[in-house]
Image (cartoon, rainbow, N blue to C red; front, side, top):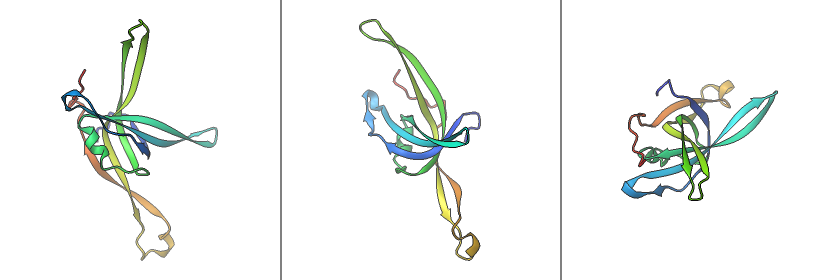
Length: 135
């Protein structure tokens, strides 16, 4: 994975519908539930991540509850409405998604049978340069 990108870790909270636009452009919203500690308490946050273009195919392999790590970039632009008001759009765009799989401990280790360890399984990687945005 690209170490220079910021990452987001959490569980898939929901998977939106795949939306298709002109020129075969696709887009899907994925909500990721993360945990954050503040003043000794743990808080849950749900963050919307956009998978677009070829990255939508990656989301087809995900299910609600899956543990994932996502490399992302922030994307923003200004838009002027027909009545002249400027609006800012900011998105968290997935560049790569890594699905984490949970592997149960081996039964031959009774003291550790209740523990689980996490292993990484790469679902898909799409380089930043492969940007197929319609704008």
